[in-house]
Every structure is written in C-alpha cells, then in structure tokens.
Image (cartoon, rainbow, N blue to C red; front, side, top):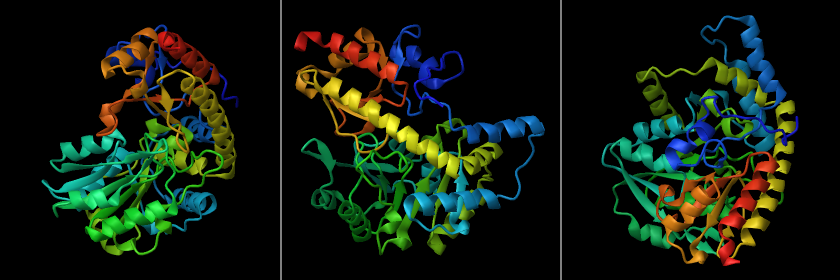
Length: 389
C-alpha cells in the first residue's frame, strides 16, 4: 500500500475527524484532525483479509480455541522484542484503557494513591479518578529538550498511601524511549515504595531509527510486582477492535487478575482476536517496518518546519507518532497560541494540560497521516505565527 493515499474519514463515525468541530470548533470542511491517537492509514492487507474472511463466512458467533492467537503474540514478542512470553500469562482486555482500569481495580483500593510521571497519557488520570483512587503526579524535568525522571524528588513526595505506579514506555506524549538505566530507576522506585508497576508499552513497535525499546521485563528483580500491557491496536491502526493484552508472569498477581476478570464476566471481541492473529505475522512485521520509515519521514518534515517558527519547539521524537510542541517561547498565554492553531490554522490538536502537570505550554500533534496533510499543517502553522518571523 501507499501511505500517501488520502482516505476521507469524514462521515464514517470517526471520532478523530467527525468530532473535531464539536469539541474544538475546527471546521469539518477545512480542518486537519491531528488529535486522537489513531492513524489515517489502512492496516496491512493480512488484517483486512482476516476480517473479510469472517464476513464471507457470514456467521459471527462466539470465539473458541485461542491457541493460534496466543502463539501469534508469543511469536511477535520473541521476534520483535526478544521477550519470551508464556501463553498462560496473557489476558485479553477491551483495549489498554480498559486494561489500565482493570489493573487499578484489581491491585488498589478506593483512596489509594496511583503514581503517574507527568505529563503523560491523559486516560490514566481519568481512570484513576473515576475509580475513586488518588492521582499522585510526579513531574518529569526537561533536560536538553527531553524528559528525564528525578527519583529523589519523587521519593520525597511519597506518603505511604501509594500502591501503584504506571509507566508509559515509550512515553506518550514526549516520545521518549527510556534507557536501561532509567527503567532500572523506575523498578527501584517501585520496590522502595512497595508499588505494583504497570508498564504500558502500547507504542513499543513504533520506534524511530537509531533507537531501541527495552521491555520492562528485561529488568531483573521486579517480576513479583510487574504487569505488562501491549496491544496490536496502535501498531496496526485497529483501535476500533478494542483489544489489548495484560501480561502477568507472577503467579499471585496473575491469579488476582484472573479472579477479577472472571468476576466481571470479561471476554474478548472475536474480531479483535482474528485481526491480532493476522497482524502478528511476517507480513505484518514487514508492513510495520515500512510504516515506521514513513512516520520518520513525517517527523523530519514536521520538526524542521515547526522548529523554524520562532518560539515553537517540537520535542525530539524517539518513538510514537505524536509530536509534543512547546509554545512557551512565543510569550503567548495558552488561550492565544491554542486559538491560533485551532482557529487560524484550523488544526485540531490535544491540549497539553490534559496530560497533567508539566503540559501547560504544549499541544500534541498526531503526524500519522499522509504526508500531504503534514505539509499542509506546517504551512498553516507558519502562517498562523507569521508575525513572529
């Protein structure tokens, strides 16, 4: 396929394109949707063929025998990430927001603190707050234009009521690929404060050239407190399948999670399993390699153009397809730079404060779209801030 093909998603019940006018006031007829984290690309043909095979068969019944599905996950993790997964450690949830909610529900109690390294993916805080738990924000620091963690500061914040820390690896929205030393620091922090460590690695396949993702399972000594979360949905642009995996090696944690799944009557969407089985394959792997190359090209175009606008700074993107742009250098307040992006440039983007403390001067742009859209977006941004140039 060609990632340059423009597919009009308007009128398809697509939240990203069909809701931008209602939510952001960006006109549907001329707006560019760069907010929701899904891609404007069709998934690989093997995934489409798997769905078509079910349509051709015509009977949409209950799914049975998930052996090939589990084997596909095992194959992918071993071949793409050097991670040996046992089939019995895999739980399928309705996406990873649901997976996060299940972890919070299973391993914490109302009133407990859940630590987030902010700014970070906004759904974490929403789930924590909705469940009656308490968000504990540990703000990351910017060092040479990228995020780093300050564990001495975080240690001082803990009061003993915290029960969990959720790590986003690679990081959304900052695009960091954490080093082994940083992951060891997170693991040590979790052990010091007796926290369950939930590592959301949904973006682990979308790593830019020159960087390498390290699964948290590669860090020794935390097996008894580690919960891993992965999914095909971001990698292959099948978020509508609402499927994700919570992978737990520790027997005690696994039993507790299994009991909660059973109590809630959780079972997976059959289409999600068919799509994931097809995606985690050599054909799917070849498609991902092409995708990453294309996104890297978009990244280079976007960063060069945005960083050429005085006062704007796009954080170096090591992974994901989400560019995190700082507008603090413009001297404008948040309302003004946001107005220029949404009303003058007609681009719908995510607002920085929704990602927690540290996001106040930022907007998040989704660049997983045909390059023509990226080119048009940066031209509009340059025009919207032309008085600074």
